[in-house]
Length: 315
Image 1 (tube, rainbow, N blue to C red):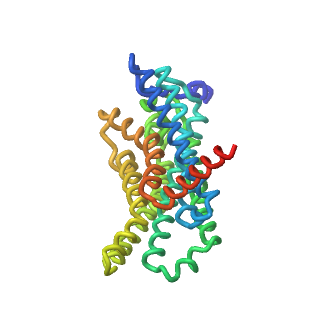
Image 2 (image 1 turned 30 degrees about the horizontal axis):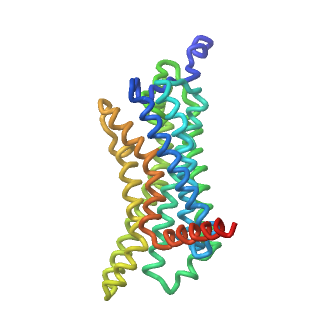
């Protein structure tokens, strides 16, 4: 037993992107700029929804929660990724590696549930407009958001408990820039069946159920839109949910590419590229898509810019 304890791995070696040679600084600066832009854009959405009376609607409340999720998500992964770009590779304590995966899992589950909540909101707004204010009350909104975060933390903790009981006593090299469940299971020298079972139990109800709800609600939404007689009415109805639909396609597209239909082991660079898209680029695109395609948010931005200009002139 003492011999086994002495051989237990206490830290993992993350290879990151390997030796990037002369382009290391360029890639670091580019990723840093994208990261800062993502943080700024999502913070702007949260601030706008908070201070603009016209944006105190369920759709924007859910959007602000999604932006909070995006800020936490990218902050969990990107700082360490930037460090790995500079130094080439880095070591991470096993406990910290497991914690990184836990928060990654929490935020992934919460994002999926928030996207489902947003699709339900659009379904009620378009398919049951007369009952919208009755169904989407502030209490109901808070209950939905609280449930999303609660399920994110509790269901992920369920997997984390089993994952933390694994022993790592042979290899410690992770050919990636963050700790994910697949390489952790491969490096474990103890039975991983309990972790795999826990992951399956969580994945089906918590990840596939929201996606199923999104598909069902959008089928109803499309049917309702097609039944609208005027083309102007159809365009207006579709424009209220087009931004959300684009984000759903982007999010689930990258998520399924990494986890459901991952590249083969010999395509690790492709997997890293998809992971960069998932952890760095998508958090920037989400607020930009809503800002560029949503008239209310564009109007709020212009209004506050105009107010700021007037304030500066008055000084």
